[in-house]
Every structure is written in C-alpha cells, then in structure tokens.
Length: 64
Image (cartoon, rainbow, N blue to C red):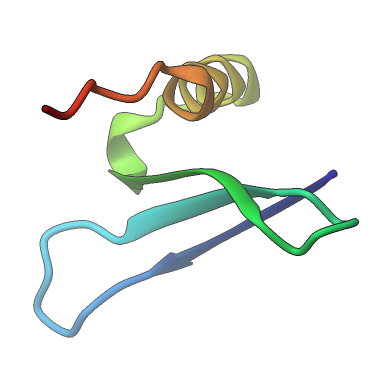
C-alpha cells in the first residue's frame, strides 16, 4: 500500500486543495481518492489524520 498526498493552489483561489490517494503498490490501482480544502482538515495532526481516514474509507455511493 502507498499513501500519496499533495496540495495545490490555483492563483487567486481562496484555499489550497489537498489531494490524497491510497494505492495498491502491487497492481498500481488507486483504491481511494479524496480532495478537500486544506484549511478544512483542522489545525493539528490528529484531526487532519482522522478527517483523511474518514474520507478515504467512506463507502462509495451506489449507482443504478
């Protein structure tokens, strides 16, 4: 497993976006992905980690 994350800010954007990916290193497939405004994750490490784990482990919506 690999966790890859980065943030990116468009010029003039209100807040940088944080992109997180959870990948299977054996197959190269992305298992989960999340994009969130960096300032909404919290100000310390613990709330940021809790938020990211919740986002990356949320069940996918069912599609008809």
